[in-house]
Length: 307
Image (cartoon, rainbow, N blue to C red; front, side, top):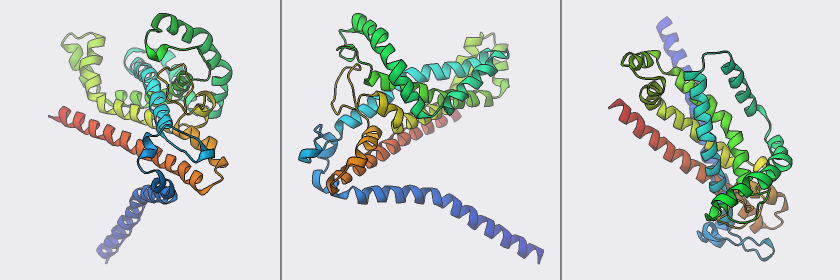
């Protein structure tokens, strides 16, 4: 009798957890289907040309998402170029180098950065970061590296560079915190083995720690990239919101999330509304593609390390 009751309890427990597990993919599928159905008018009207068209003129019902895709990718790449070395370097310092109480204060400050609302980052970017970049960093880059297209043109506070730097600051806590937890989870015996062979501290980190932690660090980078791609308010306030493609990082840009925030409330026609929803669908697909590629890379690294 007890055995039958136990089996019944296990069956109920299994059914409940199965429902919880199935709710997540069902939620993703329902979200995708909703976006697809609401954007079907735009898909039927413009086809794949919507992705490669650069014209954005709601008055003439001419729409193209290429400037927004370009702005999203470029601003996210700028954020990664800045945040990955800083975040991983800070995580290495906190877990491998520092032995004082100072590292706890640094870790606390990093965690506090993640708690700041994005609107505060946006206001700070408008009044502090943007003017500073336009008056100091951009003129310096233009004078020294102005022969490169990405550093050409007049300095501007509201620009693709400002948006990228804001995103870098916002994703820095995620990369640092996750990378630190991954590094601290590595058995100390690996470090002791490397030190017993006469390795320096840098060689211990390089040969004994980073190869094992590579997959976890990539996960932290992907989590940060996911936030950078979908970030809305801070980027909307500092990126310039100009639907044009420019080679210069000093020029204003636009992102997928920013155009949704700016244009959704002004969509007065069915086609305009459908276009905005399709931009949300593109943002969802872009996020899934990035995470899928990262997952493949992690599988390859994991299988390589196990071999």
